[in-house]
Image (cartoon, rainbow, N blue to C red):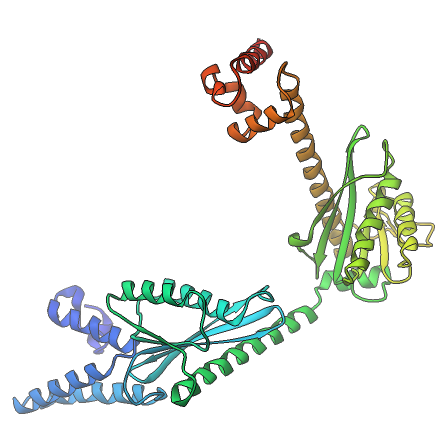
Length: 441
């Protein structure tokens, strides 16, 4: 037998030292304590204590009394919210800018058992009633217990649907109330205050995290003699194949980490042929003209993939926009990994082990990867459409319809004539089959 049994912390169910009924009652009691349903348990312990006393089993009665006192001491620390001993969930919400916080207070048998809050980002377009509806759905998808009464601060569009859904899950009717006065309204205001508290805590933590500048970013500021830490960096790279399908990419790093949601892809519009400098000039101009038009914040540092020529082209674009003195810009050349700064003839060469250089290489490589991926996607789409259009009798409209139905040229090539006739004429189906048959031969 284990030590827990000998020190009276276990009743030895694994050794059969307790009956199934006693074990199940222990499990039920534990559930009651964890869910705040302690009134029935207290009553059972009192009855058990008096029964042992009447039978003159005073030692057992004393043990039960100790359990009862421990339970009463535990429940006395729980704040009594309502005197009717009812089970309720109370919802509240607080909002600041594009972040909101919703909360649910769990009241069991009139006592505050616990709370759960949810941080909701990008909620600038969500109204209070939409946030409440979402929170109720999320909460009751995660929990099995549904109380008889739910208090919410406002009406919401899905009130009838949610009430019916929860009633069916509960197996009996429940009440969703929107109290305006009295104790129930006060508890709604308490929920709202709690939501405000958690929202403020989250915003403080967010601000503190943003103030903690990574070591590599601070090293980059030091090594390049930048005026301020480059918290937000935007890096540009061009990609083409023998002067065709000219594209460019822009990746964003914040505090040394990629922020993929703000990556951007560009198709070069004004450049004919393989002119890397003109392409860079166009992309930088388009990017920062848009930021100016939309009154958005400029990055702390612009990084250009290339050497002196590429950074000069980017600076020309910034000068057209009047931004040459408002944003820091550098370029990273592949040859010797030299870093070019404006008005500097010779590049800065950092040690290969430098954390600053490694960060710049990571950003440059990510921009290159993103540009190559975009370029391959365009080439792939172009190849798919071109191959279908080479088939006699297949035009752009038919090719598009076939791609939508079959998903790819490969699937079209595998299809037989009967499958193709469902979407094109018999003559076109025959033409497609002949084309791919001859191609495979």
